[in-house]
Image (cartoon, rainbow, N blue to C red; front, side):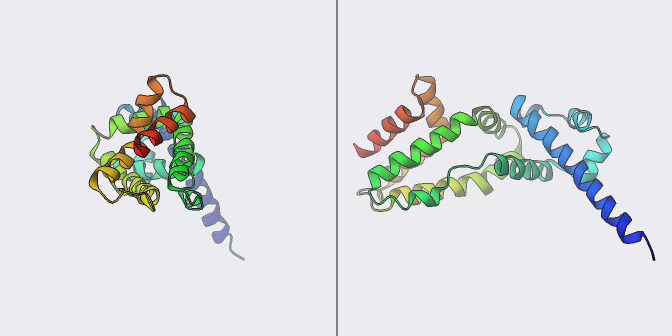
Length: 192
């Protein structure tokens, strides 16, 4: 009987563990210094591998950023927008949504701020945002616009888009508003 299948399975497990260490090291760096300031050399050092090993697993920025984004979102899932649909009243739905979303922003500010800042510097990160975060944001706006008078107008959707943006929450937080007060202020602006 051959031990070859066992060796292949062991090698696959080892490669997956190495890949996971690389991704975790990169995610830690993205959260502390940001993706643009993260170097392959530092990822390799923290993961306990060579730079070549990092490149073998992730040949370009896009591959590494995709893996990091998936790993991070899995560990820090955003609020379930589908649950907001169960709230019939559009005004109440908006307040519930913004409270949950702003609490998530507050809990994940460092990573989100670094990612937003560095998307201006890294084309692969900007493309990732356009492919993943923008559609999620647009889906939120569609859900929050449902049943809301005037939401079909350009201004209504624009204001909802502004409300769900990380940058809006951050501005309100810097003004001293916690997630609940910030959500109430943003929802009040839409209601007016």
